[in-house]
Image 1 (tube, rainbow, N blue to C red):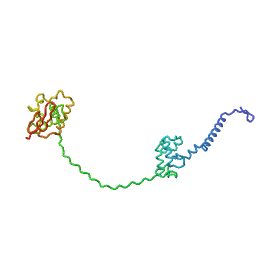
Image 2: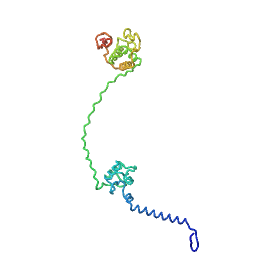
Image 3: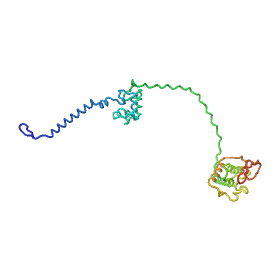
Length: 280
């Protein structure tokens, strides 16, 4: 209770609190204003332009060097440095910001809406020499590609391939690919010669010609592995596709000379093999 005009009135606590709050707010605003005016950090942020990393008041190559020092860890940037050096606005200080600064120093880009000229203390950009004009060289005429002769297209019958591969296996299985091709080539020559039938089956099944086929039929040798069978099939396919290793008149393959002359001779570990020709 307080005495007023000779009377005692209740103390108004609410009004007292409002007065205290108003005084505190006024004091706080005054403190903030003084800090902004006299604290160097606030003054610097207010005056430093975007990109002025070295705080010299202009943008030049020195700012780019300082940004690069920040980006590689030679100097440690603070929050103010980040705000000033983050030219591209990606939230970090890096070489991209330095490149923008360098472009600005030669007047290529516009920073903050203004073309910035090269600073007085910054080195002038070196002028690149103009490339020497090359004398036109006469165009070399490319030779026209030689016309290739059309190659015959062979359709390989799988039955003919298997029969030819089996007879190659029975005659020279386990020997070289060269001998496999020569044995198969004799069969092809006979098919194409007027002295013999014109199918592989009829040539191979003629009496007293290919003993393995006549006695056992078209059966692979029991001792032969899959790798050698594969080679025999490859040799048959190559011959049926048009490949030839001997002249067309080499019609005989036997253990003794036959016909009008010997074209080739191979002394194998089991018996000699003669490839002979005819003049008919």
